[in-house]
Length: 166
View 1 (cartoon, helix red, strand yellow):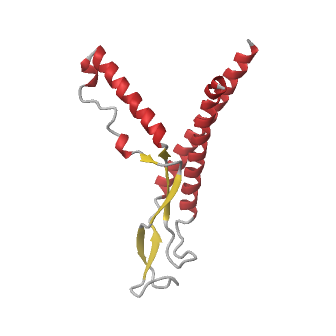
View 2: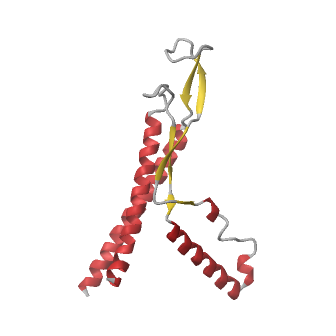
């Protein structure tokens, strides 16, 4: 069972990555598709969505322990390795949770168009403040990370296959 756990660890990690990037691709595509939506079913402008990637607390602790060990080894070998460097600098930004979730944010821009059916009393229409270029950049990034995860799965499959052929 220990061997199976080691063999399949890469598949579980890649599956989480694939799921996270699929969610990120979907939210970016939905934001682009609704860039001009001034009213949803509940009568408000479309709320921009973001994929929020989270890490399980146990994984966070393992990663934190690994950073502690690496920093300790670097300090023992040569203290100059750590001058002005902190491997933990970005750790507080990581959210603890089960997996990737979608969060909504209401960011609006106003355009003057008194002839629009959804214009307010002053003639302004409220649109979601979707930056198409930013959303496309997120889609490209998510797509490349998705491809990297697929490549990791294929490489692991090839390694296991070669191991079994020995």
